[in-house]
Image (cartoon, rainbow, N blue to C red; front, side, top):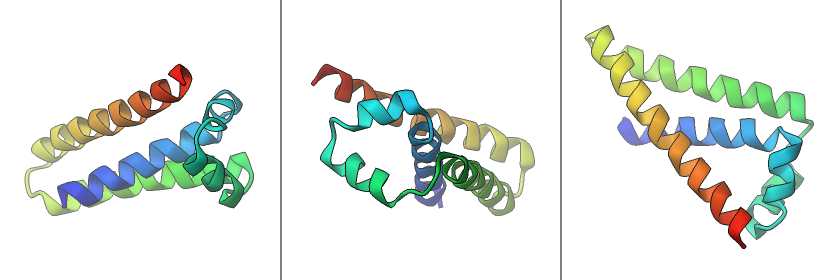
Length: 96
């Protein structure tokens, strides 16, 4: 379940970042992200998908862990790990 929540958060952040023009220019340096950009629809829809993925990850975390306060802390920890992963990937694209 930790992996599923992390993957949902990672995909949500990726959709939100690719909906912004600044990050789309950086994504042009990556073959993988240029293929993803061809598949993604308009930026407002991509933002909606990103927010829905983040909400789905929080709902999954809150329903699977019995203690709500531990679930929120755990979700925030995986959220920061997903954000760090996406930020490191985009910063590596800037260096090339």
